[in-house]
Length: 289
Image 1 (cartoon, rainbow, N blue to C red):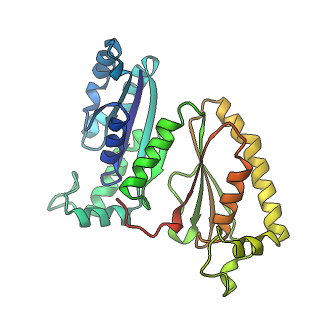
Image 2: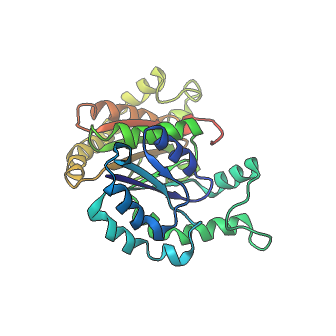
């Protein structure tokens, strides 16, 4: 039986993720007490009903701290009996605060004495045993609900038969590092099309920016070095049964150099036996879902 544990801080999109898995045929339970996880696995594993071959549960800070303290032990007990994947969703504090403000919902750890910012900090501390065990972390800061559901489908469902899921992610350092990055390559030392007035409004997907960067020898050298690193070491990660890898490429604003390099690397890796996905974080000027 395959079991997916969904976790993360409140407002990060756990319900949307669980809803997507339910639509994909998973047997889903929200807010499961961690102490009942072993009983659930034994019950579902004993069932001969096909719909119980895939299950997903949400375990988060609504559990008590004393229960979460036993996470490692409980996971160790069930691992021999299931194909387990632990997926953590998160977003930056500013995004989470904005989402709570828009929905006017109360954070489960906040009250008249505990402000939202403090509750978010406490929640992260409480979830540390789960965060440190995550097989996959998804940064939902810039995702709509529909994009999050697509990401869950692509990374958990479509990737099953294809192999290791490799996400090529472009981003801008001025908005912070992506929390789900496994490898980060800094491109800020490369020539910047932003300072060319005719290219400033374009992106790395546009021909003008591409031509500008193609003419720069150091850009070509950087591409070859990153490509060779990835083609050498990603297959080694796959041999170790790694399921998910996010390769993040950053420049200052995330519009030109990082987008260009992400597109070029995605084409270079297209013949590799991976479930390859590409995402440009800063090209999405949307309100999070």
